[in-house]
Image (cartoon, rainbow, N blue to C red):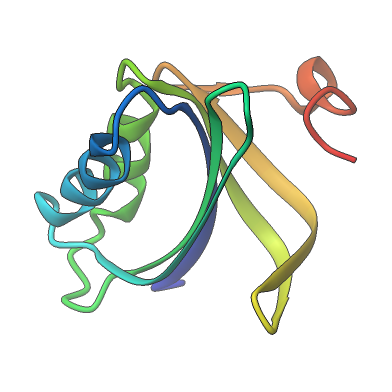
Length: 115
């Protein structure tokens, strides 16, 4: 079982509480955040990269990701499967996307949000 996952979250930044609400979502499921990187643009769109770690091995990471995808300010949550982290730069080739608690097929969104 993989105990660490990297996720990409896109949300609408209407107040500084967005980052706190994302963090609180994982905290209530006893999921640790090892690191977080946040980038916001001028249109109030924020992209958060988080490394989640299930230290207590409870298996709540997937449940917390689905719950996060149902939050009001969150557009989508991607689980990044094949990634490489180097000096705060994240490169990845494979991911899974969840919107409103449901998995979105890759052909429906590929090329829209990714470079």
